[in-house]
Length: 503
Image 1 (cartoon, rainbow, N blue to C red):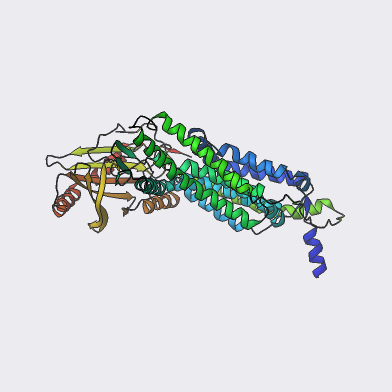
Image 2 (image 1 turned 45 degrees about the vertical axis):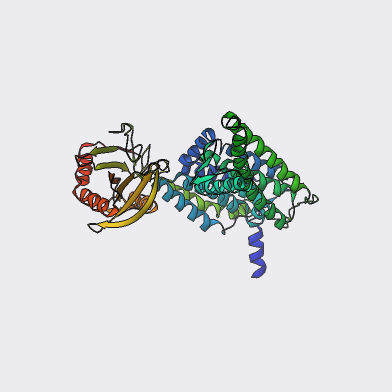
């Protein structure tokens, strides 16, 4: 009985060049592409417009080159489909479905790449997938992610800059991301965070460690080094810019030369990283893959069919996911009502709304209301560009979650650079669910779309300026929020607007 099982398992091993394997691979890759079409198009659009993620164009060619440089082993390889990645593939497809419903582009794009990795793993088997684990894992660098690190990197860069300025004896005053020296003021903006350097260094460092080192611990150490060095180097770069401006009386390092200096500095850092890494390089050794012993099968067709029944399970998964994706309504927002740019006194900004209202009453209270589809062809309620106040002009003094009619609202007290106070209340409404948390609002948008409960979401806010006493401001805003006609505005939109769905 045991011998028969071994023969049956071995008989499912076929060559990588087998036409049936190549046809199966082609069909499933096409199915994968159809499921993730929107994610792939969105990913390429980010590569084309963002210098930070332009390297994404090179990731797939590099992975293919890494495979092809080992073509002597690859072309002789035999594949044996594995059940192990199937549950991982199913989870990745569900995450992609949820991300599509929630309009979380980066998660959808990550799901696309991980699904491709798990699909290839399933098709070629555990042994071959482990042997080529780096070329497969390297595909993850094609996902344009990492921007969530920007605020943290800005803080780190500001800390390094101030530390080195004080170490050098240059008088400095820091207020958040603003750095004041006797000759001028500098801001650690998004472009100064070093996110471009960090992501580029991570991608290049991972490739260098794989090509240079044979031992896993060396590869890990160098990759960590490639992550740490650009953070430290960016702090030194920012310090150098401020120091040069200080000693040149703001004549240098404040315009185009600022950017040129930054990229030249980064190029030197990459060269330094490679130079240091070269001292610990391992001698190149053969990476021959131990192939399974070939079993002479009297029926090659039977062997191929025994291989194909595992990949055949994947196709219904893709078909089901594609059907569910098509059933999620996407509200077309070609003609957006009231989408003109409002000039808000406290900087609330929500672009791409289906309907938007901003008014002030005779007491100086401002009301803001915007209506969104849970999923739109253009624009979304929860995005990095939509903010409840202008973070560059206002500093948060305090924030407190309150409840009005048993529904949560967030009370925020602000102060600008001139010391003028302003307070505001805001709330997200997703169907019948109320929250002040962006993540919860995003999750509920996806849930409502998947369960077909509601297609509409709202953001509601009221603001009042000039009141130093926060308790008085709270009372004023609470009363204004309770008397606001948000529900009537929403009902008016739902009754008058013509909402079409793209399926």
